Length: 370
Image (tube, rainbow, N blue to C red; front, side):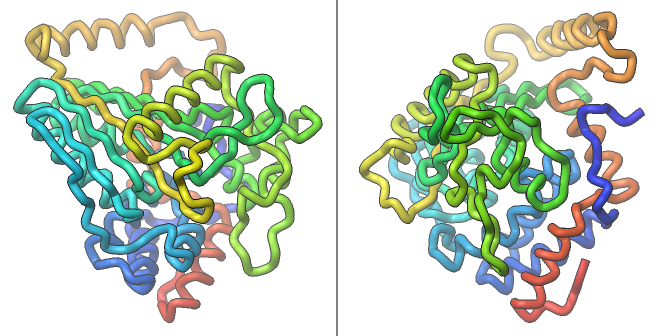
């Protein structure tokens, strides 16, 4: 039975994930990316759709292209290692695509964590980092637990608890735990009530957002994405800076407090800059991320860790259901199931988003269509 929390849009078309990847990859090659970088961007975006996180999926294609034109994203960047020790590395992403910049930094950090037991990775000035759960999964695949704090200093979207205007980014957090012979536990969420991309998907005819997800200047709650985007001129991608409203933090003061910590740790601590930074040019848009990586067998043998974790999973999911139609799942389970289903039978993408992708392909001289 389909989980009621993840309902597909009716105005959508089912496509094969490989077909979608191929077209998206060609688009980014035509936009100036290397074949490898384009393939990584396409793979990560399409996989986000496959997992059910359309907010970080192919809806981003036209926006990435716009950012390339504006030089907010720079293709084919080689990240700069600012300094490193046996257990610490600081990397400047130089406004490169997060889909290639983040793996560069994390691969170095993963090697250090495997060698030393723990590592700290600071990434500054990266392009959009995509679905942060990807980076927690990357660490978990190597037997590492991880915690990731992220901010986007040029993307001020979220009102602090008690406020009505924008002061923070959506400030996502992700955590990952490896499991023996099973998909990893991956917790990945924006500290805003909804990710900005979910509002964008809703604007494009996808799943509607909560009726109280946004707040207007007068303090009134709304679920109309136009409160965030305003009126979009014909032929232009929606710009979340154009609307009068803001996204609300989830959990009132708790989510707002977590977002504050993301801005401080991912932004200020890494040197990338917070949303309130006066040292970041207004026209720039980059992400910061601080990642803590540590071996799952640091304190007890991995066999013991895995056995205890398996027992807790059974205990956790064995609770009597409050709703017979909603299964109790551990973090990452829904995404894993969605991916398996999408790879087997295709994924649904809102028709308006497909039209945008096809228009982008045509504008770049690409003949293939989705």
